[in-house]
Amino acid sequence: MNLIQAILMGIVQGLSEFLPISSSAHLVFTSNFYKVFANIPIHEQSGQEVFFDIMVHLGTLIAVLIFFRKDIMNILKSMFKALKSKDWSDNEAKLGLYIIVGTFLTICVALPLHDVAEKLVFSPAIVGGLLFITGFVLLYSEYVSKHVASRKENIDWKTSILIGLAQGIAAMPGFSRSGWTIATGLFAGLDRTTAARYSFLLSIPIILGASMVYPFVKLDFHEVAGYNWSAIIAGTLVSGIVGYLCIKYFMKFISRFSLAFFGYYCIIAGIATAVFFAVYK
Image 1: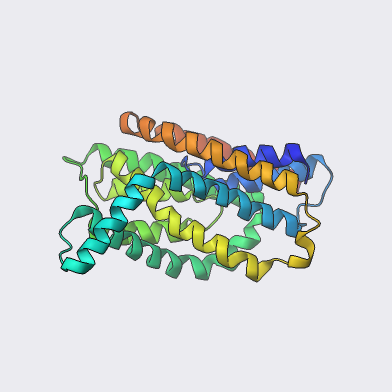
Image 2: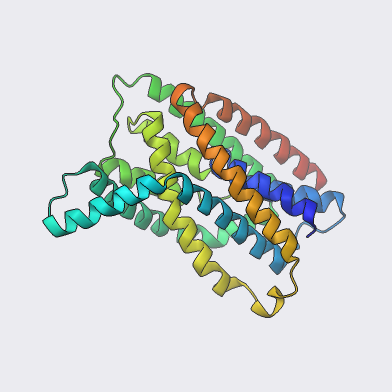
């Protein structure tokens, strides 16, 4: 991995982690396009690539922690206060519980899909097909949302369960995590801003947990010292900076506009990449 490749993938991760276009799909596409043009077999993935993927996800995790730092502190304070008083009527305290519930359900769904999801890294054509499905999910969620008489500004138990399940399904590359969780929120009657805020907050424990556990399971730490650390650090910093800016402007965008643009993008990108890699294979 060289510096230019790392920076490019950092930009891709920073943009696609929070936009509803599937960061995993775009990392798969970027990595495999690079391999195609560099004459590297698609079915080869080095330990450095796995480690780099973890690091750029940590970069975007830091971005969401910084952007939502006040929200996170308010939720934690409200939860501690509720534990002492045994009064969980505060919306922020309940939101903390809903995040815990959503995370638990995500793990229950994502773990059985883990092996299949890993193998799809080497099947970019299939990932393109899954991105195509994501596009239709986004478009249909907007259609349903427009026919809802009034939109909710608060999460409830049912909605947290549904969004947690959606996030688990989105463990599959091509199924956008933010896309599926926001779309599910719209299906459940949430307004766009509330759905996006909950989606981003719900991503924190999952990305943090995966980043802490995955290295000890998959990495050979004897090789880590030999990695291109300048490229890894650059890619991580870029993913964090781009991710922060992406959250900032996407929250403004979604409060005023629909997800239709991203839906059409996923459909077009899904078809294009599926055809390209099917022909290349």
